[in-house]
Image (cartoon, rainbow, N blue to C red):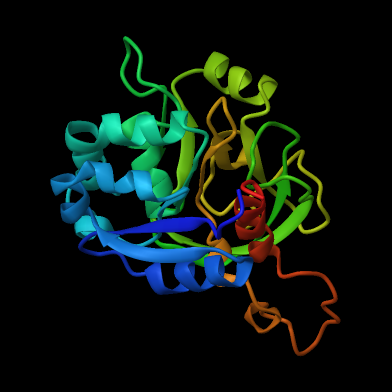
Length: 259
């Protein structure tokens, strides 16, 4: 592809991270545009103009009936065919925090089966909103967005971010297929026992982000758009930070997919 990849950043009532996400995609070399979900529902074919769909963080519809549930309902009832066509065309879908919740509840990341949702995101073990920086380890699998990444440092900010599976078999399948793209680890990178606050929500398997089987649909609870400049790091004045800001690498991988 020779043109700059166009990024559709979806807005809905309660979205509050769209500007930071657009900035991150611009830094990575993309061409972001905003579109309200109501406009996309009116004209689902509009999605075909883009190469990347991003559902950013926030509190869509105020999380009034649960995090991401209303926006997920709009996807299932009005946008499923358009988003599946988008994905099947080799394009990318990214869901950050609330966007991850939407992708989980629509079944785009792990399809629904006879028992309903095999996985979900529910209340943090501490029962409250948690905002802090965490250390993460990238998995070795098909995920386009985490290619070449190892240990990354990003902030989380959520109340319903605990990843749980219906049973141990589902978790084992996600792990064996390499679809666990990001895990919470301790500050030293170890991942055996990862207690709070290293695992900020109590997620099963310390899961922070997963991808679909293609590796082109990715959802994560941490906010990569909040670490795309060295001054975003909480200790940037006290530590020598020579590498690319960790969050920026995720957006650059998305753009490079189309080069």
